Length: 484
Image (cartoon, rainbow, N blue to C red):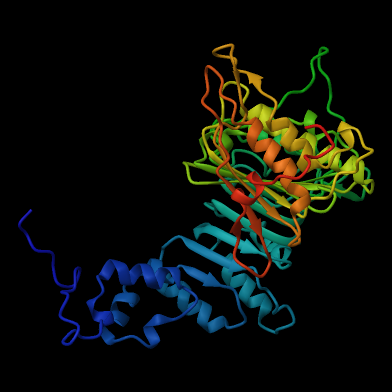
């Protein structure tokens, strides 16, 4: 413990008047190598000191990230200095097809295919595959990204025994009908993928194909699904509906779905152990309360704080996001039904279903804020189902439920502490609703203390938020005619 670290690793601190500017020569060798490695787009050896230039020249892995361009001599130089280090090939900005050396550059890169570990391609992918299919090397490629291209049926990269992929990311890519590449993966990204049909033509990848891919990747840790998709009529075997695929190792989920696809996509996965969730869902004349929310609410239970937001004049958009805790959660749902009442019904039912699933066994422990963005004024002649989504949520949260463990009544969201409103300066019409809500939740139950909202924020676009809690609670005018 008494040993002093070398000066190159821990530069001495001097008085500000005598302290010298830090020099690159003070960097530890390992740290300098990492800087060069993560900025492999530049040839550092051409402008650093001789000492560092010699160090760069002697480290093959610092030359192992090769960006495809028309400079044939430069690529030969990088390949030579990389020696036998595993290669990372980047041909994802391939705008050199008309260059006379394009073919030679492609041949040079594919000659080293047996050393590829990571590769990314755009439209030029088929040009590389034509040469790779004629190669006789055993492939070691583990990470592959393809963008705006097509995968042919006989592509060697995806056929055993060459197939060793663990991370596959396809964006705007067409895959063959018998594509064998969605197997044994640990990371899978499908964005705008289409598949060729046996009868000809292509369609957005089907949910049945996605389900099969999930089954064939039991060790999947990261998943990104972005539409459009073709919703399949799932087969029913022996009278039992096809259930979700259990993925115990899945940690990160990213999903973006179009109307009519959100429910089927959510039903594909059972990943209770996920730690990072981002859903961007759209609906139209659907029933989000029937979707498979229980498999996606783990983040709500573990978060330190949550914000629940209803947006839009008609309350057609909801957003739930978490902060703090061991994981992250971000759920965005937008209903595109062109009927105001139907939109509000759909948005509210989504929030109710999510919160009910999250508190099925025990109350949420996160500190919670409600945010109403431009809430609409309730019509006096509407019934309960015609109330705006924001008001229906307040009604839902001021109705006690029976705790399943104790059998006694309690409030939902016991740590709801803040309500924020984004609206025009005149918010007096809201005060009555908010005051009644706060007073109602001040009732204590045997298994739960009084649930006190302590903050009501008025949010402005151009001014800092102001706390109007005292104004709301001092509101003396007639309470709203609509019973809450």
